Image 1 (cartoon, rainbow over the protein chains, first blue to last red):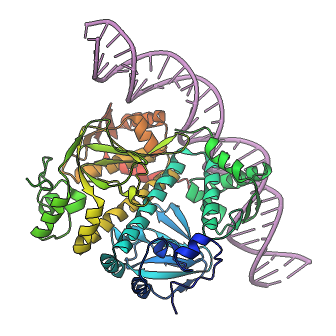
Image 2 (image 1 turned 90 degrees about the horizontal axis):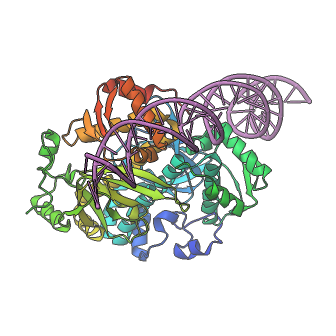
Amino acid sequence: MNKLHNMTAPVHLSQLKTACSSCSLQELCLPFGLSDAELEQLDNLVQRAQPKLRGEYLYRAGASFQSLYAIRTGFFKTQVMHEDGREQVTGFHMMGEIIGMDAISTDHHTCDAIALEDSEVCEIPFGRLEQLSRDIPSLQRHLHKIMSREIVRDHGIMLLLGSMKAEERLATFLLNLSQRFASRGYSPNGFHLRMTREEIGSFLGLKLETVSRAFSKFQKEGIISVQNKSIEIKDITALKLTMGQQECRT
Amino acid sequence: MNKLHNMTAPVHLSQLKTACSSCSLQELCLPFGLSDAELEQLDNLVQRAQPKLRGEYLYRAGASFQSLYAIRTGFFKTQVMHEDGREQVTGFHMMGEIIGMDAISTDHHTCDAIALEDSEVCEIPFGRLEQLSRDIPSLQRHLHKIMSREIVRDHGIMLLLGSMKAEERLATFLLNLSQRFASRGYSPNGFHLRMTREEIGSFLGLKLETVSRAFSKFQKEGIISVQNKSIEIKDITALKLTMGQQECRT
DNA sequence: ATATCGGTTTGATTTAGGTCAACAACCATG
DNA sequence: CATGGTTGTTGACCTAAATCAAACCGATAT
């Protein structure tokens, strides 16, 4: 069975469908023309999907690096740790995203990756990916783009952490989630948060109480409706406004 | 003349010297065994060093992407911009570092790079670098490591921005600079800041006044001595303690 | 149903750092 | 060597978010 081309998630998003015949590995095989033979090769490289239960570690900081991981289904967080034990969530990762690239630099993982719900990942042995990308320039380019995208993403988070205030951060976070769900064919307006307030807070550089208060405020203003982990965005325009219009700190 | 192997900076740091016969492009040619022929090829690819005056843009956000840049001498800052005009310094970059990798993802630069002092950069056409790295696996791996290192660096900054308090951030910043100067053969204890308090603040997610106060506090405590832009670290242990020992926010 | 436990909400209070303002130092330029 | 402009320091004050604390909610287990 073809591991890459078997997607159970909704597929009513045209671009996804057309670009990569129902492939869950969005990032890896989406927008670049590979021949069937090349796809075949790529497919051989990717290991069979393996399940990860909620709470399981995909990898731990310090572990030696072998593979990148493509998330087939589910949700992960990555977090870095300071010596003194304090930790910071560096990202939430969902279906179609590839994680583990931080480990290339030292051949050891530099953060933990933990499943936030029962998930499936495909392991991509990095050595072999490099090898293959030597033969397939468009794959090479694509790999570079994926890594670069991670850098750009991180810069965005630095901007958020360095110069936005609490409500702005949360609005940005919600809009980002919304957009990512949308691009996978899910509703951009209603979704389920897989992470706790504390994890959101850690990611956004806020305390969980602040996150909770901001949620409540948005709800009172009718911008969103919150029911524990279920979010419904009722006024996306207002949310975008919250995100941008706030007095800046810089 | 060999552009890569001509370094005017002090070279009394053994590792630098031995690994890459007096090459300023630390990141690009430091720790991986290339044959002379391969080095030759790499050398041909890199453009002749071009000067940039203080204040000049190396590239601007939005500009189309052609090349990475290796900093031969001098100092740069990179900054991202929010729609609403607020901007955040994402990094300070010095001799031997390579910048521009954020642009690979979209074929357009996503941040500005500005010289903080008169500098020299070597342009590295990215297409040709990719091409060459297909033929030279160790170059390929090295390129990946460089990109990955940028991701790791960014995660560190996210940790700083998300969970450290002002003085801790500044201590971390100073120690990082110190360490980078040291690894280039300069003194780790005394150096000249090329950036303003405001730029430091932007990078650290603080206001310039807060940066200034933290400097003053460190000086009063005898940890450093500040003379405008000249810094002398007098008690590196205390500085490290400041960095780690603070009550955490997470 | 009742207890338990992790997660969440909400309120009261404190505080780190932002804001505003004045001034001092350090330039570059005429 | 004045002089205007940027950059840096310091003080007084204010506010956003942290902290502390209590209650609440929704699961799962008893």
